[in-house]
Structures are given as structure tokens and as C-alpha cells.
Length: 318
Image (cartoon, rainbow, N blue to C red; front, side, top):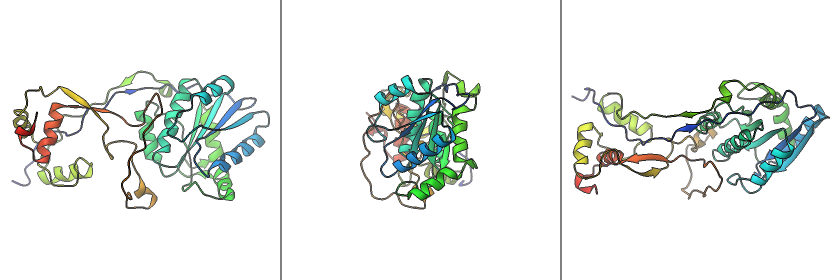
């Protein structure tokens, strides 16, 4: 019966636990403090930070706003700069997150600085509110206080960048400068200072549904390569597992999920493009200690589930 509901197995692996990063205590005021403005070294954006330095210095004449350009690209960590800020600074404004790659990088650097006891104010463009919040959650710092500016950002005139600074945050609906100051001075909540670990469970079985709806679900969630699949019922997976002597729960390795199962994914559709463009190799990620992509664990059973979906035979299993 085509409308009869069936139960199938979940093809996804086991996500790593989330280790919470307690946010640093906030400043009572910016008056008399040393605040670092960190330019992530994205081309043709530096004038924005110079304008911010001028604007904030006019508002807080007794405060030192130190503008620094981070070494390397947004993929590179800069421990020497963080050490300088830890020694001499009281807070950090950092950005710009204007791509689905550099936006997660901003979050990673904020987590490093917050761990050092430095309050941060990350600046992201309005194209990536969902991505940044999801990624901040995965990095254990869901309360990170983002300020959003209009998109596009790079290659804008100084007049446009000045307008961005003097205008409103298009996501939070308040002045950009107010949001930055608030991020550094509003007292940290109990929720933002939580420690510990969050375990993320992935159900072994999906909710029962019709075969047609389940096929749509697999396609929508990116669990296929776009080709037709055989739905992995428990009976089919059990039969597939007869082809191997390995135990179903044996972990065989770790692998990064592909988009959209990763929070760090391309969001060109959001920017008005329906195409990802031509394929390219990923740039190696060299920052430490926290890589931007997650490594999920996969068991023999997960392999069997995907083997069923691909139409493999049990003889194909090692």
C-alpha cells in the first residue's frame, strides 16, 4: 500500500558533544578602558574599522580604541595578537563576518577570547544570522552577542560604510553602535556563563511515514546524492549486516558531514543566487584549537544503512 506508513533507519552519524564556553564578565562601562578593534584582514574592508575607531573615540574620549589587523586570512589563528589583547586590553570588537566561511571564523576567535576572560562584540553581515547562531551553539557559546550590518559589505565606498555604522542593525533593529556597546557592557547572564557538556542524540529510527514522504525527507535534508534510493528499513539493514563479521555498533571512523548537515554551509540562495558556481577544493583549515567543521562518528550500522540506500548487496560489505 503506497500510503501505508513505514519506519526507516536514520542514515546520519553520531555528532560530537558540545563543550560549553562560559562567556566573560562584561565591562561596567567603556570609559577609561582599552578596547581592541580587530580587522579579520578581509580585503577592501579596513576603512570600516577606521571609521568605527574614529566614531567610538569621539564618543568615548577617555577610552583607547586600538585597531589591529589579524595576521593571515580568516582561516589563520593569531595567538600573538590574542596574547597582546589579553595583556593590554579590556574588550574586543571583531569582524567582519561577511561570508559563510569567515563568519564561523569570527565565532571561533570570539570563543578563544571569551575563554581568556575578554568580552567580545562580533560584527557579521545580515546575510548570515541563522548560520552564525547555529554555529555559535555548536561551538558551545550560544549567547554570543552579534551585531549585524547590511550586506554586501566589501568593496563599498567609505560613505556607505559610514552609513552602515551610523545606521541600524537590520536584524536586531537597533543602532549598530548601540549593539556593539551593549555586547561589551550588558551584564553576563547565568545562562551565558554555563559550563559543561551537551550531548546531542540522533534517533536511530525516523518517525513512521509513507514511502513517498520519507523519500522527500531524505532529499530535502541532503541525505542522498540526488539519485533514487532504497529506503533503509530495519529489516533491510539487518539483512545487509549479515555480510560482515563486524559488530553493528563498532565505530569505524569519523567524517565531516556535507551541507546542509553542517552549520557552516554555503548560503548563496540567501544572497540572490540559485547556483553554487563551479566546484572547487576546500581550503585547508589551519586554525587551532577548535576547527570549524565537526567530525561525526560512524558505525558499521551506519555504513549498512547507506549501503541499503545505494542499492548495494551484503556481499559488498567487508
